[in-house]
Image (cartoon, rainbow, N blue to C red; front, top):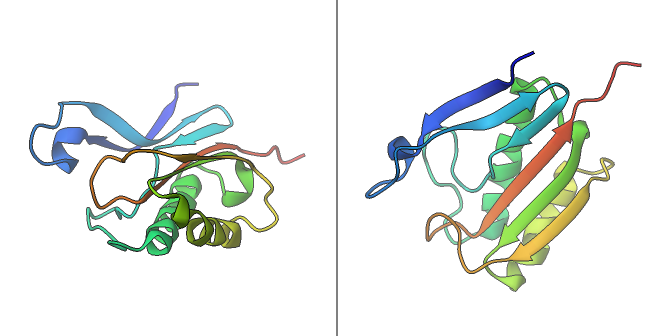
Length: 137
């Protein structure tokens, strides 16, 4: 079975200026595994949600994660690993509170990192997700 690629895009279409001509997918499903592009305050229409507000950006990211997983045949319950990138340690509590609300009862593994910056200046948080679709057994 070939890998399924969802919401294909080229970085030149998203990032202004000197973006590389780079073909990517927002989600990839291989067998029962799903990987998502890191989600931020950027919505599916290219609008930025929550400028200056890490909780609002996390809310948008989790909303997009939910949609992407469903499009790929999974759900939030299938998440096995999250990686959360923050540019400020003080953003940890508001961001984690949002993620905790969306993933209540899921119990994924999680890594949190403080980084020097993300793809654009207004991005304060990025959430990366891996999922394994559960068997119907």
